[in-house]
Length: 250
Image (cartoon, rainbow, N blue to C red; front, side, top):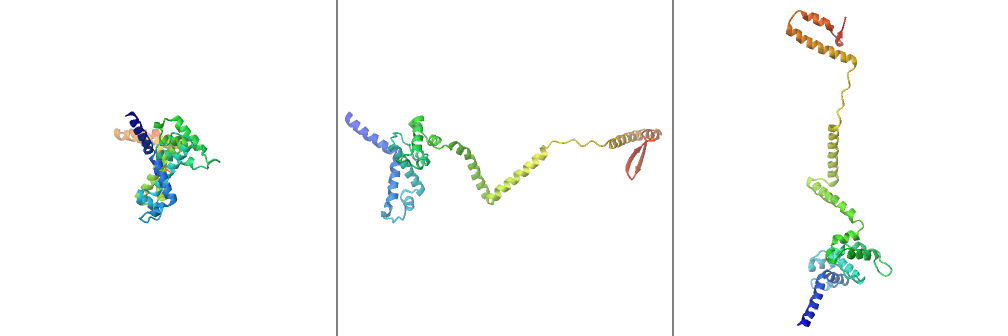
């Protein structure tokens, strides 16, 4: 009983491994079909690999090529002696740039080996994700993440320009012109209010005397007495000439 169970378990274990890394087998099969052009033997009279991908596996050719790349990356790591491999296509493709660098004399990829060694050293197998691989494999990962909002804004600008019926250049120029106009208006509103320049001494005397005239005239009208003339004489003569109102004394 135990022996049969052990044999069954060994078969299950092998099957699990094959299923777990099915993306590798799938990629290698696609690579063989692409390189040997075996799709030409199909009864459907398929002309090229792109048509094969569309009709037979219902994928665009670029997706099929990604499957092939991911498989080759994982096969390389296995041949380099790593017993932990990328769990799926997404993880493997995070190593694509390092895989495509020029190889060493013996076909080795030093930077890829170093990056994957760091990944498997710093993270347990079940903790490895595509993001964690990218953070180690891509030295510009942090900078690219900071640019992500800019890409989102750019996509939004393209969408809004289409909705407004303007080309992108015209739309962006209109937005920037409106911003500069609003900024200029805000600057005028926020500018500190300056005190008016003080009037020259001569004008100050005129204004003071004029104020006295109006106040005394009101009092005189209210009192309605003969003292009005004497009150006006006490502050001087009022002459209306071509030069405007002139207050003189004497």
